[in-house]
Image 1: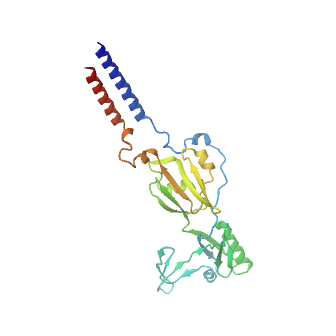
Image 2: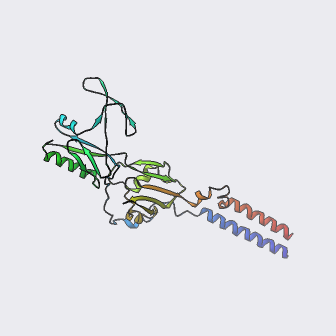
Image 3: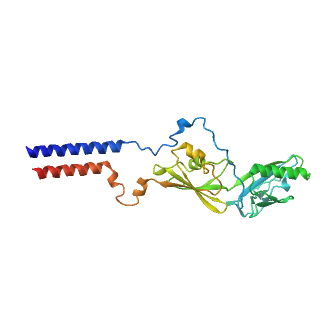
Length: 280
């Protein structure tokens, strides 16, 4: 009688253990969905949009358009040989006479003093300016010196970007293609976080006046992301998506073995069998 009572208790323990394991395995993770607080943030005031400002070693293209094509050519630098420009080979273009020529626009590189050497105007300061401010400054100078009466100046970024590493689908260098470039833009171009990415710990490192600044973003919390200084990215920022605990455990052979419900079910079954044999 006592043996049957002990056996029944062992079976009850096994059933309870099995139910607990099944409940744990069916539990929905809470750290996967982005912006879980978005519903209560409708109408929230946002921080002022931060535009990119030029720094030393940045590269830009500057194009001056005018009703007089001859004047345009004076302010647009091009190369006519077959060397490589900015990492891509020069492609042959056909000129008006029908003959082939190699032509490629040359980018201006901002020097350590934050200046570029612009045709005819000479050294001009662009460091700390947005591309719109640079375009307006050049346009005003051209008109003031009566060099071009109706200039339209366009400034475009060349090879400016951020680096995205870690648990994303497509890690690597991502070009910045607009003035207001956010962490959401960067992660989207990187193909989104993998299922193993830690959405509560996305790091952004930035050089601020010669000092390294590190920001931690919790992508499940929209309010904290929108208010973070790292929401708007700057050129040369490093975005790193750290792995979640599951991914970390995969670094060793048995890391996730004991997180698999089936292994605990097998262990519980074995212990129940052993207990029944001992009672008998």
